Image (cartoon, rainbow, N blue to C red; front, side, top):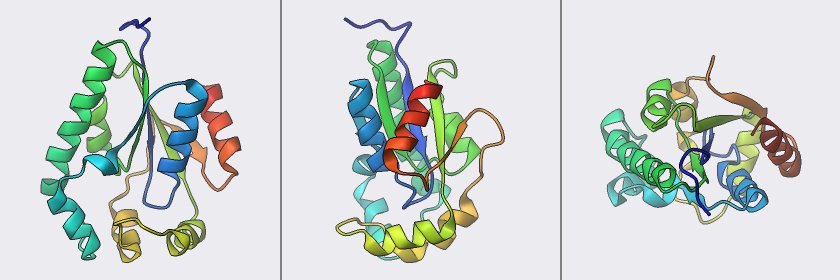
Length: 167
């Protein structure tokens, strides 16, 4: 049964290598909710840029964020909770995704640079060029309000348990 009044979307966000996909999948599994990976919704032009080591600009991101917001709105209007993994680096991006601030909850995966670098070195089969980490960290606006900050250097099960507690 679905209930549009009780549905929420948990947005797990942070820079590349923070664990968005792994944590998002695990959280979705624990909660019994669908998982949406924002990387799967990037237009091919964005993927080509990132593969080539070119950072995305706002003009590249806005249409992608609009697609994500539509997915969030659809989940909420259908009364279905979900987990969305998305970089959402700037507050303006998070504002765009907050289709219903009472039912879209943000969880920032704060991760030390050394951990990010190691994870990116170890990752295989992803289009993100690890050389773009600096540009993501420069773009990142850490939340000062409106998000739960999670220590993403912890073991994944601890991170998920912390998010579940907050939910």
